[in-house]
Length: 353
Image (cartoon, rainbow, N blue to C red):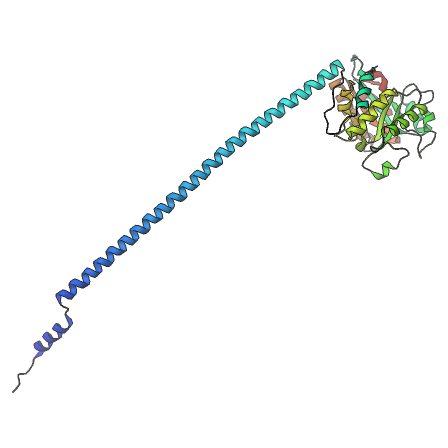
């Protein structure tokens, strides 16, 4: 009989089949260690690469920041030099202007537009210099009324109890005989139409334009002299374009001086060139300080007159300009208390020639 195989024999057989040999186990563990070592090496290499890349990036950023700081320092130094240079130039200009006013000597024009020889010769030939009279005990206030072209306007001005200077239009569509208003007047001005930025205003009769030649300007000023044989003072009607044009205004200024006129700048534009030109001719620059009736209300006009008084107290005189409106005349006739600290005068009473 064959021997009966029991449970133990089955178990032993099964164990023998499932249990690996020692050699096989050693091989598997060796492989695992090798894999782990390779993983460690690769992760170490990746770490080194990451650190190297990070170091390069940080170095580049630091270098770029350093260059930026150097550029800022150099540009800052340059800008500081420019600012200091500009300040020095500004101080030089101011000193030249003040010395020019004191000595009354013409200086050469510094402008992009070339100055003609005949203009410079006109400066040297002109002997009469316009200067302010000495300060009085009270500050002086000049009130000019522009746009006068009719007798009734002149009558209202003359009826005021204070000195007011009428500025009379040359003949125009408003009145072709306006120049006759000046006959017998001791204190008056000419209100000369000059080119502005408004087409409507530039349509006014015989408006002086920047495109005019010197001969055309001379002819016009000779005509003005014939119309107003006793006139001395001229101010501009509109004229923002003309007074802002150095070449045209320089030419006209010289012609006016030859004809015996003194120009008062109505200052219809902030960039007017008249100040520069007057100083080049050795003259005191005279201009409007304030308009009094841009708003036609008595309280507004009184407020503007008070401002004019404050300006006069500060610099010794002030020039205020208004227009022949009824409201303006009413405001002037009721402004007596406003003038208690100043002396209202005609335009020619603040000048000496």
